Length: 58
Length: 475
Image 1 (cartoon, rainbow over the protein chains, first blue to last red):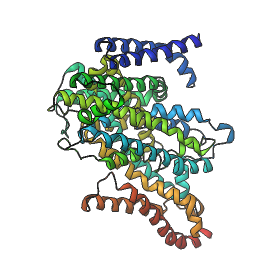
Image 2: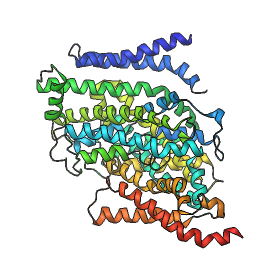
Image 3: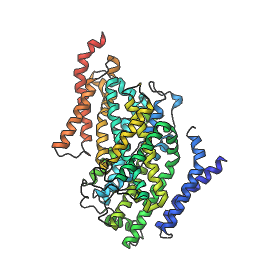
Image 4: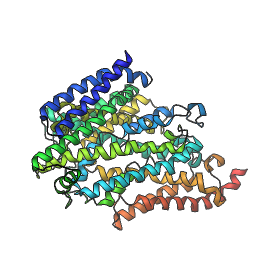
């Protein structure tokens, strides 16, 4: 389970950054960037918290 | 600004508080990279970047000033702080107690606690600007010094109150949450920069074909230089460089990070601080600055530095969450640590109550926008106040025996207040005050000569002080 969560959270970080990079290149709308960033944020906190919490010594 | 780092120190303080860190507890290089990279991306970065723009900085002065200033900060950690930390392996407070005595360390704690309170107040201010996006109450302007609306006071009271209660109840939980949030926060800051840059490209009809075009856009539209906004000090390359170098002065030259690097196997591990400097104090400041410059580009009369609306405009709810979480996760350890510092004055008092009272003071401070809107000057003052004790530690560790005197004199003599160290501290601050008040030296530049003044004073005063007390100590 842990490796899956780690992979998904890594993908969430990529999804968080990529839309703004695409926006910088002029290939998407800002509204789309905002929604994708919010989605990536939710996925990050849901998937990263379980394994990072343990790494921090819970 | 690094305040989460203080939380690590507070946690570390529970271990090997009054003994050197043993070999089996030492940490590898990677631990320090992760720690510093996340910790220097805090809520206050969202104020500092825009304030550079408000200070009328030019593109060249900003970029080169930050590159050089941050490099000097890293070198200060590497060559001033870490070599002592990895040799003595003691906390700052135990090292200081051996040199200065318990009573002087208590006074140092008090100064540290007060500064932390105000810093936490600025972080509460940052978080409260996000609340204003939802509730639409009037928020402070760049020139405001006092609270300007009931809505603002209520928002700060609610945000600050929640932060204080959480810090008192569950400090460690928030510290762990901060570690989870930190990679996300760094990338949201990067996204701020990308979005802001694109908006500038569109708004100015700039054609970008090379990095040269980006640089031209930066020079002509983002950081144009010129006069600062009303009430702000004009920033040149020297201001930017010294600010970047000294904004964490309490940690490197002031030796606060002895408590962190005592766990490092080698002193060169302090190069890991460059991850924090060039992520938080370069990328994050630049990103936040671009957002504010764009706001000014759209409406030059809209000079308000409000991280909430800035972040919301660029990244929607994710941006707003970033402002709240960045302010919350950095105010939390700051309030906790200020509480610990105050508790040292009255060890029998409840930590819970002290933290709540500290949080209340920080919340009241946060209601006054003067601290956040003058954050550049406040951060310089914070470093200046704690810096002389770093000079005392440096001299005591490396030089004082070469002058025929004892190091760790308070420990050897049993004195609880080393007057040589105390006077070196007070007189240095007095001289700095005179230089700023009457000689026209700006606060950003006074700490560098101040360090040498403190070092020389400590040597000269120790010559008299140790001579006077040695016979008594020997009895």
